[in-house]
Image (cartoon, rainbow, N blue to C red; front, side):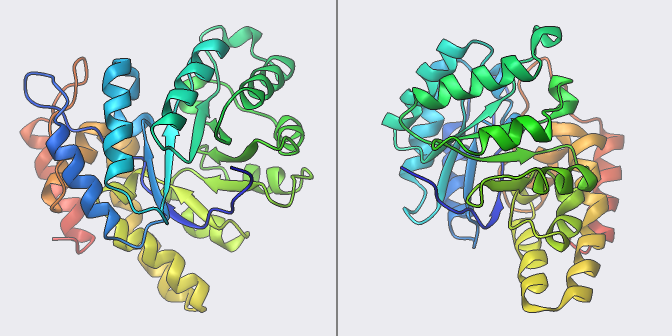
Length: 298
């Protein structure tokens, strides 16, 4: 597959677990079916909100398979296949391709972060892109990797025929503009990676988002963009501001356990987190109830 333009909202989907720690594939499939009914651009399976670092390879492959089976052909199935090793990343990406994934999102290798400068990043992404059967996107998520990919590197990678975009989860709109001004290929998909920056990103010309909030509030995330595109910018901004505290709660504030709790409250199936992540305390649940009530979600 060559370049394709991405426009709209994509949730980095959660992975529900049973209380005994096993993946709850039934709940997962039910969520995918429900998201498939929404006006989403697609779904991202095996993103950071999917507790991917805790999943065995056989679990990852089964989740990809279920995602492809339950997602319409006109929606994108993006898969997080980035691993620390170049060879292992290529292997997992091509396994995802064989299962029907449309594209892969690659986390920046970071364990040996001191050696992951511009030269190493360029070599990694180019070698993976040269050897994968589906196009890839760069995943810039500094809060996890402690590595912030530079506009210069993104510009060079954007010229590669099999590197079609980047998800920037920094939440830094100034940096988004720096990327946009870096001479990216005109077909390159620059995607905002957090609902915290959704309205400002739209205002500077970003067309797509991959955001945790879309797990539990896909309609509201979609509506922010729809209103903006229709010219109802004040209504778009009002909705964005109303949802902002919810996003802050289910990302930084209460983490994945909080995101799953809100999913459960809003008719999705969050399930348990996988250890060592801890469940929410009752006090935290009460705090989240108040936040989503203020946002007029319940």
